[in-house]
Length: 323
Ligand SMILES: [Zn+2]
Image (cartoon, rainbow, N blue to C red; front, side, top):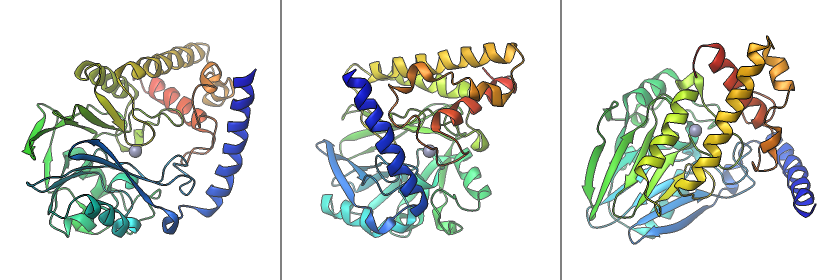
């Protein structure tokens, strides 16, 4: 009863908050950057709560900073509009040159700020698929960026296969390509000595999974990415999603199981001849809604709640013959 009441409060407060947020759009001037140290030379930067309708739990995508005498490696670059604030947060950690910037995936809350750091000398690395998607997309509406600046584009690209490794600051950084998951060009970034992996957005702990099929993502690939993460992570490895709280590999199990269960349920309804609207109306995520923070909040794309968006995606993937 107690937890049901708390859940009700969270949902209603969250819905009210989100409705007013949606009306205001992203309030860039209110975003502040928080810095968290995860290892002696590895830091995570994230935006403030309650100012980004797509990410009420923390504005924009998380940034990683590996600092030290060999220069700085960044993971992701947040929104273009807050470049000065991100740079100031990095400068509070280290004054050295920003040499490399790796993108986890194409979305504007992770890449819109790329040009700012490229102009400071950073070499941008990413999957070839990410670069292609970036040249296709005339700016990401979620990021509201002008976004045609060629400086934003990755300079060094790679495909699937063995991880690309960078050795600097006593750390081995592995860029691990992931088969089409959250998008078609996802990369996990593993810091071997720090025992931490930035996993991007194929896992999230605020809202239901978002698989961006329009940018090459797939349900099958997302499930494979989760398996791969569980395989390469040790019991104490810090798994750091693009948004939300840190997890470890055991946290992935219920998430994966939920995705598989929803997929089964949707598959059954498709076999019964149900339409997409009927499948959405069946509320197949109901058994999980109380356990998914933000799951019933409006999604920032696609209309409806994040649960509805997830179910529509599963439906379309199954209809298209994906598993
Ligand atoms: Zn994303």
